[in-house]
Amino acid sequence: MNYPAGRFSFYRGVNTNMKDSTSCSDGDNRQSVVGENLQLPLVNGGKKNYVNLDNAATTPPLQAVNEKVSEFLKYYSSVGRGTGFKSRVSTTAVDEARDILADFVGSDRGYHTVIFTKHATEGINKVSKRIPFSEDDVIISTWLEHHANILPWRRLEKDSGVKVIHAVTNPEDGTLDVDDLYEKIDRYRDNLKLMTITGGSNVTGYLPPLKEISRAVHRVGAYFMVDAAQLAPHKPIDMGSPGSPDRIDFLAFSGHKMYAPYGVGVLIGPEHVFEDGEPEQQGGGAVDLVSQDFTLWRPPPAKEETGTPNAVGIVAIASAADNLTAVDMGNVEDAEEKLTTYTLERLTEIDGLTLFGPGGPSAEDRLGIFTFNLKGMSHHLVSAILSYDYGIATRSGCFCAHPYLLDMMRVPSDRINEVKKQVYSGVKANIAGAVRASLGLYNTREDVDKLVQALHEIGADPDKFSARYRKDERTGEYFPDGDLPDYRKYFSVRE
Ligand SMILES: Cc1ncc(COP(=O)(O)O)c(C=O)c1O
Image 1 (cartoon, rainbow, N blue to C red):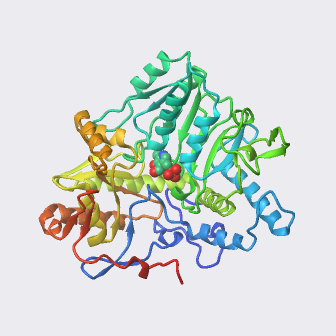
Image 2 (cartoon, rainbow, N blue to C red):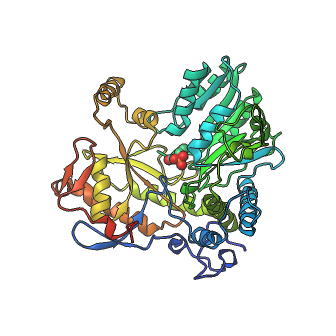
Image 3 (cartoon, helix red, strand yellow):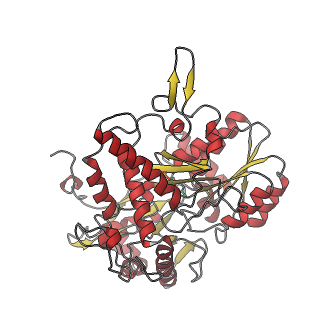
């Protein structure tokens, strides 16, 4: 299957195999994901086609993933434990999934092990528990990170005495201060054990120069880890061979951000790291022999996957990786870069809009993630109006990256300390924040146009909208006056 660069299509019609598709659209891949053509109610009583611009939080499933999972369910059974036919099918599927994911990110099957986790967060936590750190070790990270790549290291620092250092960012455009980073790598060269960094910011879409950083880290003999939660669905990844100077040693990502729900993630790392020591969680599936007084652990990855594996999630994420590989991640990247450039251009038309992160019309150094504020308006209010009045899904808040966003928003430390006191006294943190719109591979120019039009209208007459919304003083969120839809009418677990 050969798609011209920048063009791809997942559409394969009903009940045909996605990989046999010959259709090649100019970007309308809406049919390729589940539930994106829904008509949903607005506050004015009308209905609109839902526009999902909240892909950085969670993506809808690929239709093909949905179908693959349904096909699998009839064979679904215990993995690695049963002799029944279904159990064999399930075990074979999980083994195959490991190979697909290893190939998806260019890992080395002779050197790396592919561990299934619940999500990227669990993968990063696992690395923090499984590299044998000692008191003299230094870990370098950055202030670009999602909390998932801050808090496990903070805990490790507290528990084990390792030193955790953060390279700073430039508050003007949210980029990494690479000179600061290289100075720190050099300063701690004798004790640096691990450098861990996001592959792409979930706040600004900024892409740090991973290859360059990897080379600097490997020159001083440390491990290089990438949190690829945002990178994996949007850019090709090549972890590289074990000897390569710009390799990635550890990589973590999540299924639910790459069109594969069902609660699974992947951690890939050097097998030898997981061969030594005891696994993070202990129980069935991870052992070869347990006597009354000793335990023999199985080799990784089994050792790290204690308990019954999430076979459905594993099939889902492998199917997503397989389909993304079939259309070629280079094509996904090209198409998304074009839409990102278009979005950046269009957002500059809006009066009073402040965009965080690298600006300008070039999309090469950022993902399609746009975090912004409208002058004089609460981020929660703008996001609520987009949802309830326009049917456009965005997210508002700090996006689990408080240090990064608060720094860009120049929130002074006095204010942060004041809010800390409020939180201690039981008030929910409502410190500052922004609105985030984020693209997936199925979004179109039309979606961007709808966002831009809505922002124009909101910015032109904010009072018209705010008069119809009430604020929840405890959380700072906004809701339209009157009754909210009865969401159970749309979906209820009960029959
Ligand atoms: C950059 C980044 N890292 C890590 C995570 C955590 O992902 P998960 O909640 O799937 O573990 C996220 C989620 O938003 C993220 O954006």
